[in-house]
Length: 107
Length: 117
Image 1: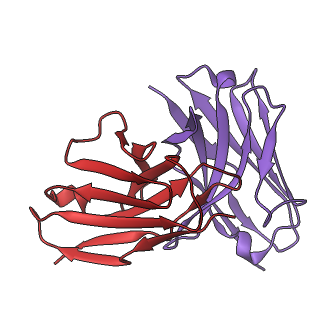
Image 2: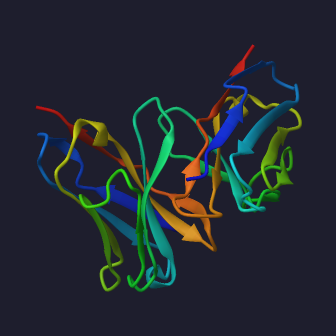
């Protein structure tokens, strides 16, 4: 099973600041990585697929990069609605696995 | 608009059985792989099981293999999860999710399963 490790666990930032979230895989997942956003009481929402492609309706301030074992989700300028938990997920091999999440909180 | 609506959750005693359903609308259901993902409230996401569009292929997590069975009824646009021999660690919100070319793009709102005596 591929283990995804996200860092940091919590990111404390102010609106307008840049957020950089990391996801590291225990073995290569090629570019088969997605990022999700989850706000309290809501289902997760797909943000990025195939490591760097924004899903439908996702604002341009969200971007993804990386391949192999190291991936990054960047939010260029935090909006109030971006304070949430973010998960990475690999679909390179079964079982599909998720990272443990990074919480982006208001500083 | 694509909608996935789960049902069937509730309180069940350890060792009991429950069947979850997911009603899909707004999509050609039979063309998509579908998944179940669960989440203990306040904790992370865990993939549970997946099934191909025609139902011929299934995948299941080791933690539930032999106890959970995924299936689908394409005539009724419904995804199912039969859960037997339930344990306390199965307590979670269960999400039904569409697989769009290998990515989990549409999620239902989830149904809560609580396993407790």
